[in-house]
Image (cartoon, rainbow, N blue to C red):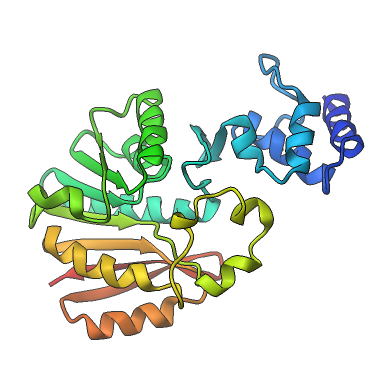
Length: 282
């Protein structure tokens, strides 16, 4: 097992990798669905051309796009350049939404309708579907048709077609038939300030879709639209929950001060930082 790991490391090292150890760990992580620590060897059934992968990495292409897969919450998702690569922090949004949905179910509110804005590869919608019972319907949309097609593969792969429906369109445009009928709206929006995009690593800025990253001058353009649009689809007492960037909670708080249609603003931390905020429609 150790020899397999080291031989992979040597191939990366000898073929131009800037960080052969990190690339080796990332490769093993993707091939073992995040279980690298448990099994430091390539899975027996996996046939990968490590030398070819090393050359692609030398160009800066993210490992996830090279392999066509990404790991999220212990599951392996199809992933391509048409969709943002899932990050571990977003698991907080999934678990926050799951807990909020369960609270509503326990209070006797009946089957829940959830709208996800900006589904990307579908990792949030599918993960939520895997956690929830059959009394939820998840309507997931993305402005990018390429992303919707990637999400469709993942929905099918996980057998989530009965819970997850996919739509293509900008923000709430696909959901005109759900005005006042939705229980929970969730979103992992683009929240990186435009001026900060150039500070991102080349493998992010050169390959991941900019539309899923650029949050405007202060990184909060999308939040205004999200807060306003969610009011049209949410029931009274419905919940909006979304991911934010590190250190943005004060800016978001000011937006909610101006938008008096919401109450019960709650913050949720990933580690030491607030990364998810929820609010209830009055």
